[in-house]
Length: 381
Image (cartoon, rainbow, N blue to C red):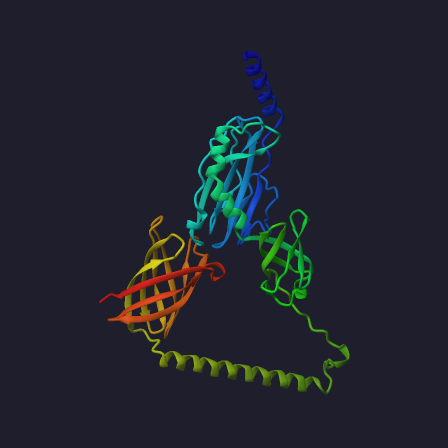
């Protein structure tokens, strides 16, 4: 027994010495990453790299080192997003694995920045016979999280090297590796058809379906300038007889454009006056707000004509954000300013009178308007 104990200790020490901590690696990306550009899963990232997510972006960075069990590494996941900035810089603890229970990601709302660090045991590196009790407990604690990751919508960015109505192939600008995604009749393409995406920088939002990657949406993320082809023989010669005529036509076109702009401005002004868009208060409301993703709070509205302003307050974290937008008839839309102030979240919905000045509202919000919100509003007199 004593011999076996010393032999086990020796093996563990050798593994710790021969198995340095691995590089940080991207294990999950969904939504918009502001920097670095085209960050994708299964790519290594250097220590000190700053990763910044937009209001709809979520990223997981994986760290690994030898644990207290020779057959398994310890895995730390830095999980962050929805406007959060993160620097790749976690510290490993070789020979230890202080496991945690991960949070329920469904309870988090796009636009509410967060950062969590969660730890678990990795997969077996070789046949270990009987699974250790602490490994089994960790696996049970992470079962719901693993299911969420398996079924979640993901994003992949790069250059579309081939695109048609059946598939699109995208090359990572960071590693040069390529992935192929299936295109179906329900895939949202921007622009469309798929052939117009070839050669452009794109982001593919996708889900894993068995052994395939199904594209849910493909969006071009670059801008294309179309340069018209001009026959030099059709251009006027400077100083020639047609040069003056061209100049007069340009002045005429400029005058007509200014006239159209002035007429459109008058129409907009008249429409605003008809809808009562003046400086007088039409009303104020205090609402109970439900984001239908685990978050609740309140919504304060001040309406002047068709313009609205106010704020949202979310009970989780006591977060308050300013809003501004419009309320025309039964249609309401507003934008919530998040932190930092350059990040926003759009809400759209309908407003229905419920009697005695009360109003009930419901609609969509967040990236791709995938979130649901509702509010019951009472007038403030």
